[in-house]
Figure 1 (spheres, rainbow, N blue to C red):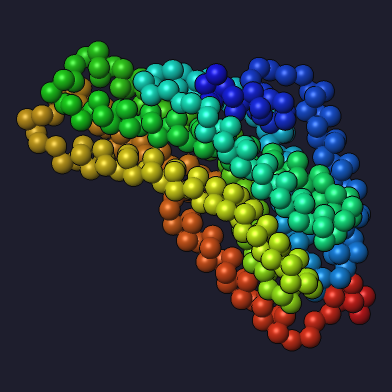
Figure 2: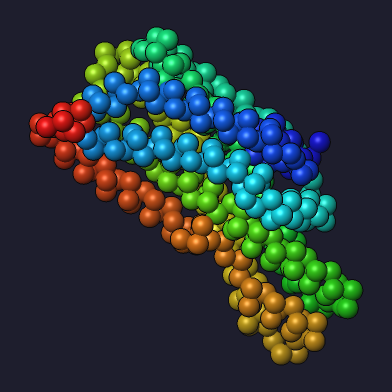
Length: 349
């Protein structure tokens, strides 16, 4: 089974990546499951929320809300909101994958699934030792929510990698100008057209999920770094070590994966930038009619992927994400340096 097929099959079970037009019953059941269980978990978390200082309370609520809305949006988009765009994107990704000589192995997907569940089981064990059964009551559904987010990161990884390999293949063929004839030019132009449509659909389908992934991982990084300070929660020495290890593992697999996805898309832009520079600087004697037609397509159609029309994905986004997170972390630390009311006391003063 191809990597793309395996990721889509797994997502199909989660109602996030249907591979054929589904009925609306199964996605509705999954949506209802998350709504009911997240509502119940929120009720169980109420006492913890109320014991937090107000700034910590706001971050915790925003982080949980972002994850919840992410789970809803990844089910709603392919099943209800953008069905046509989703199936068209899957079809184009499948075509582009079939045109590539390099075959992808599902071993990568299996390995990272094992890593994810190993970290999740350790995290569950560590927190169950601290909170006992209360942890499963409050955070049991969050394990499934996190898995949906992780699976969507895997899907984004596979999709971006197909686009990257597609542009690399086009660029490799395009560099051999002396071999450029009518047939090869037609093939390159066809593939460029597919890639351009794929990038547009990628922004439409994955824009909101990608935005929520970036926002959630930023909140998660902020919250976990805050938990690393002893004054964030009161643990004994052994519990504190387990919390640190658990937080670091989850930061690596969630925040690290988000950073990797941004870097991977920036690699697509870097490849296109290379060929655009090549097009602008090639000598006149090598500029055949076929070359001019294709180079105009490349120069005028840079694959920029917008995140829900708020901003474009490039490497600078990584710096901005960390900059905002650490700036707010400093603000949180300053709040903790002076006596603070709990959120309950703050709301009822």
